[in-house]
Image (cartoon, rainbow, N blue to C red; front, side, top):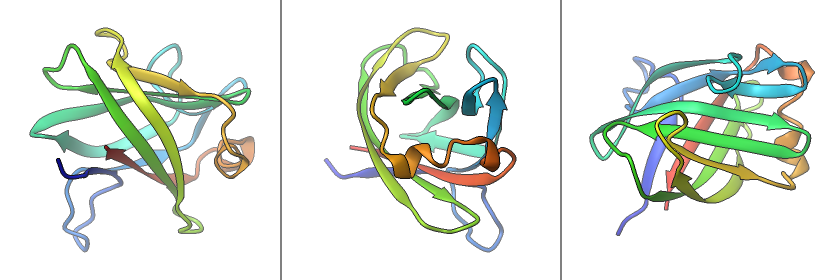
Length: 143
């Protein structure tokens, strides 16, 4: 089976690409990123599909050394996904890869969810107060 890539970046007329979002870094107390679960902070724009199904980012949130990742896939109510993330601050254009691993379906509220412990400093340094309001390209790589 081939590698499926899902770009979470804002679609532009120039790129002509599909499946794109831009994350605007938000903050709630000591949490940074984007969440529509147990908080409402950050922003995501664009539309994404995977295997013909709509994908909704629920959470990409860093707090105290942990990175929570959650998304829903339209019509999918069980199973697991194995993913990696490529996160690129639009300000620098430098992409950092993070292996997330297996994400299991956790129910209707969050969909597929997992957390990453011991997040590398080149990732955790993106999720700080100085980056609130800045834009990040997030690519989910389905393995």
